[in-house]
Length: 233
Picture (cartoon, rainbow, N blue to C red):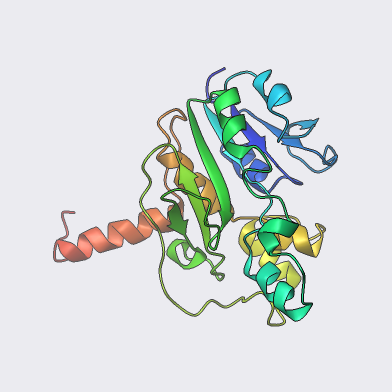
């Protein structure tokens, strides 16, 4: 199946919306029923179940967004605040608990992406992205382990919208390209469409995905500046 993307741990469809906009064939898989919100085909199933996942068609790309609670700063802050008798990695499922790498082996995709928070230490040599690099009003740094090389896209700056500081929910949803009707946790955990498009631009098994427009314009401006602003560029 050419260009098929399996979107594992899909949630309501943050990645799915980006895949839909790129007109890629995709199927979302989640243990919760998101059939009313996920754009396109959806299967309610446990994406950590190796046997089930092995029965799926081998895709061009397997996108995996496992739960982040074992790795998030908030979990570690809460561990200290509430004096937990377990560390977040003991309290919440890790990649090993979720069979992330066993599932990748079982599905045998042409390529894969594993997405998680910037503090996830189970990602191997991840690509680092943030919103400022794409001209977005949010930082939202996320890290991605990929089976193909992708350069980092991070820029420093003072984002207009900072979660946890009285941000406007509708503005955050708009910045990420997801419906404002989603729950706050769903909006906060979603990644911007530009991140998905940027990564897939470099994926050898997914064809004809351009760089996000804002990044193309920035790179063109940088190139023109390097050439001295010549009119013939």
